[in-house]
Amino acid sequence: MEDGHSFSALPPISLGARLIRRWWRGLRPKRRVGAGVAVVRGEEVLLVRRGDNALWDVPGGGADAGEMPEDTARRELREETGLSVGPVRALGVFPHRYTYQDGNVVDWETHVFVAGFAGGEVRASYDATEVRWWPLSALPDDVPEATRGYFAALTAVRA
Image (cartoon, rainbow, N blue to C red):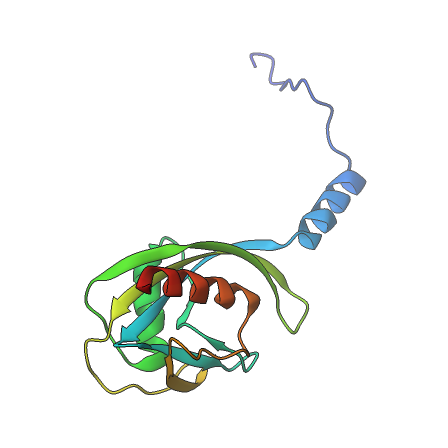
């Protein structure tokens, strides 16, 4: 403005209102994008046992800032199993809410891909405590709820 004063149609927000807003935002679940890859070898799929909850899951994790989901899936597979894969195809996007042991709640949008096994030695590393090939006809029961959705989609595309 010419006279040095600014104009707003809204009244200024009080300090108390700002504190309440900050507190309220802290209560809402955080939103994250993640990705994983189901590596298939014949009639088996590679799963990792997670170090944080001891449940079986496809190798995967959270995306780094600016990282594309396919790149996240490839990076997480390499970090958790030591494997690299060739071409991948999208299995689906699976939104789900996850509560961590510390009470932290995250709304995930997880992009899951499928890739054929291209060879190499599988080893558990990073945050995976165990790696194992599971028959698609006998997948484990001790998995996160979202992983059941991945299994259903994988079974449907393999049928």
